[in-house]
Image (cartoon, rainbow, N blue to C red; front, top):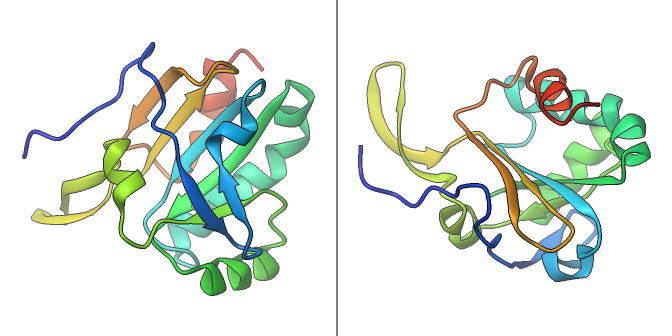
Length: 157
């Protein structure tokens, strides 16, 4: 494996200013004062990513009740993200990182193994960012299924 950046609790969360599924700019700095779950996924409308997105959608009320905002990030273009949102009834923003610079800054893009082959790609990851913009939790290579339930346990929800 290549030596890629991995974030740890206490690190400042890399700021971003990306286009979301509605064509608007979303900046991490605009979410200061709130806890944010930023989750990185490889591709909209694939089975695992759909399962994970629907899990977040179905858990959104309890996450919001705990003061947590959810943002999904992938290399998909905003138009594809809009279709994904509409098809699955997603109620949280999805941001587009086509050049993968933000994914790379979070350590969520790099060399990974898939079916025994090494390749470059998005590493399914979840980051909890505290209200001051610091990383509270960084989880890499998470599973699409059951991850949101585990995250809620980790956060004591």
